[in-house]
Length: 222
Image 1 (cartoon, one colour):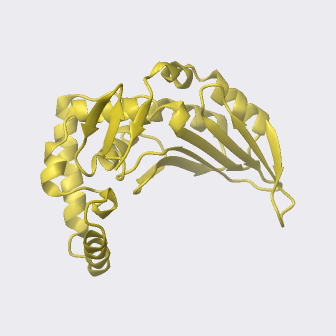
Image 2 (tube, rainbow, N blue to C red):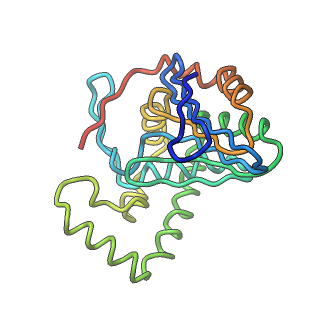
């Protein structure tokens, strides 16, 4: 594990790239009771068109956010968010660190959905979209972005358009999960009241994470 001094602070960052490509960043902080852990993937609304094994896929806008909903549904005291380029799942607290870390690793790397689940989630996401549809600041931001970018995927809303949300299928979600939720495209950040050695041990012992090293490589592009 590489040790890096954080400039202007009496703290250190510990970094390791695991055998399967997963990036781990750990910052133990002295005299802190709380901790923050984020498990992210370099996959957001921008990555709607990509290639796996020479086959090109073009997915509906909003599918990264939809996939976040289905994984996040696993149910613990955590939160998640999807942006243009990333999706992050995280938890904070001051106790049960090891148990929460193991749970986070498990539910982010495990997609179990049915057609019924997908149809149910469409209604939830469409309602979420409706709730922000009359927010002036949100509307101004969305329209400015849409007019500034003609073909670039950056123009699309992270939550997706109504028509595209309705078109998302179980197979679409599985294809995107397998392409982007893989160790060599993901990273873990843990900060605060943590034991760096115990943390890296838990991550390395997670069998699901290392199983995904066998997935085919992908290439995404606009």
